[in-house]
Image 1 (cartoon, helix red, strand yellow):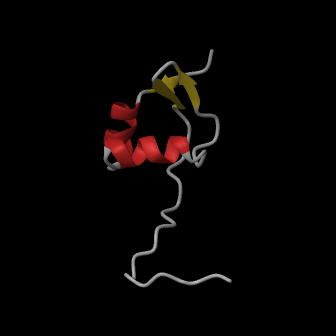
Image 2 (cartoon, one colour):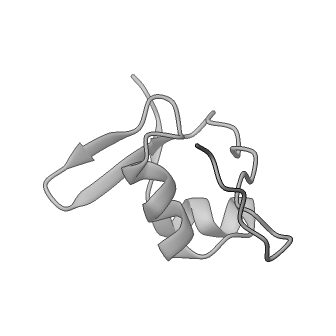
Length: 63
C-alpha cells in the first residue's frame, strides 16, 4: 500500500510553508500527488522540487 503525507507533514519534512506546498501541488510539480476532496495526498517518497521562482527581483520578458 502506498504511504502518503499531508501538506502539514510535508512542510515539516521539507522546511517549506504549507501554502507553498499547496501551490506546488496545484501546479503539478510534485509527482504522484493526489487530491481527495479539499486535501492533498503527497507520496512519502516524493522529493522536494527545485525552486524555480525568480529571486533576482527582475522579470525576464519573453516574446
